Amino acid sequence: MGQRRQGFRDQDRNEFDERIIDITRVAKVIKGGRRFAFRVTVVVGDNKGRVGVGIGKARSVPDAIRKALEAARKNMELVAMVGTTVPHEIVGIHGAAKVLLKPASPGTGVIAGGGVRAVVEAAGYKDILSKSLGSANVLNVMMATMDGLRRMKMVKQVAADRGKDASEVMPFWSRE
Image 1: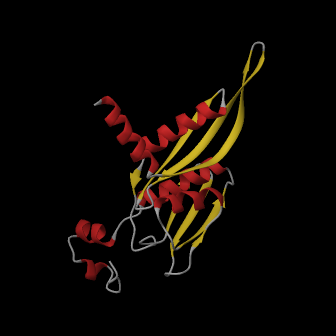
Image 2: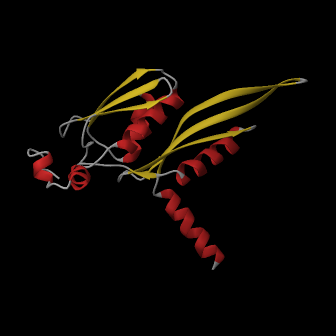
Image 3: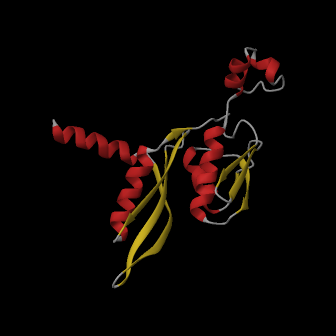
């Protein structure tokens, strides 16, 4: 039974879109000099509205990748989607990095660069506009993107919070 369970985990792992975004060498200064390690940043998503970002640090790259993938799978979150785009415009912030995410009409594609593109594609968005503002640090840009996606709300959620019907909150929003 143990092998069967392990096989299920392997099968579950393969259905995720795993992307290594950044591999950086970092140094820790100690008495005898510097001790080098690697920091790996990854994105894991199911292309259906669940996405997670993970960071792993280790003395060797394969160990850092393994740790990052485990962290990303553990931190996966459900994000709001309307068809193939985001429900509304939002600015995600993490440190000095700001990321603007805007809905796009069908057929636009993913207009994003670097870390933002990886996160939104892994989440499953097909049509989205974005602009990275502020810091260009890949890790902070990815975290800002996740912040924006995390704070995104569906029209039905906002309507329920206000005690109104969805058509009263956004009358033109009939695609949902």
